[in-house]
Amino acid sequence: MAKLTEEKVTAALREHLQPGEELRQWAVGVRQPSIWIIVPLLALAVLPGVIAVQVLTKSYILGLTDRRLIVLEVASITNAKLKAVSEYELASFADAPAATRTGGLFTHIRIDREDQPFRAKFHRAFAKGHRERAMEIARALGAPG
Amino acid sequence: MQGRACPFCGGRADGEGTCAACGRPVTLARLTCRACGAFTPAREAACSHCGARQRGEMAYKIALIVTMFVVALALSVGIRALSG
Image (cartoon, each protein chain N blue to C red):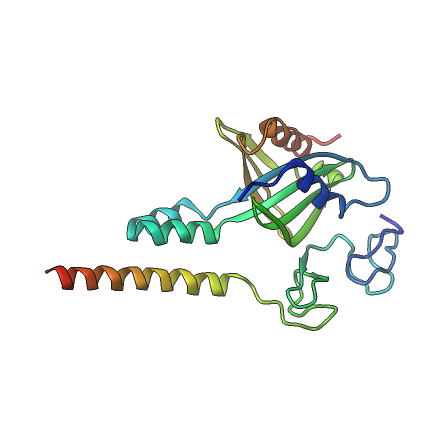
């Protein structure tokens, strides 16, 4: 199955924009279970372990607008069927910036909020320019304005 | 934030971002109800539109994973018993 295209991602995000709100950037990422769960599952049995990791992985579409960060939890990175929506006012990151880091493959974004915690990683090979997209979102959440 | 449409009831938000009609914050995290497809607050146990109970996915996922490992173990034991 083909992964989500830019058109599908932006169409999914546009449904959640307010009047006059401008979508600036988007990224598609996943949240996998902890490595302390993955390793024992794979050690127990490889094929069921791989399936279990897939089942426990959550997929997200992030949309950065001029006002908010919109987080869409979707069925998978190939299927934009919406499961949940959460949002964060950009101004709220001035007091509590997100924890972000970029490695060779992934850009990690973690938002530590008691009411709406969020953590996901964004692979550079998801789409052309995806690393730059994710890094731009990470920069905006780390130091808004 | 004022005047923004509430994702749950369609009402309008006041200056604090609370819906004047249903009293919920309009920025509340929301789930898509599996029964009716409408947005319902993630914190609430039942859909605010149709009243369907919102079940977490983890219960069926854990059951599925445990079943897969039990089947894999049974297959492994069965194949060893047959071959040895």
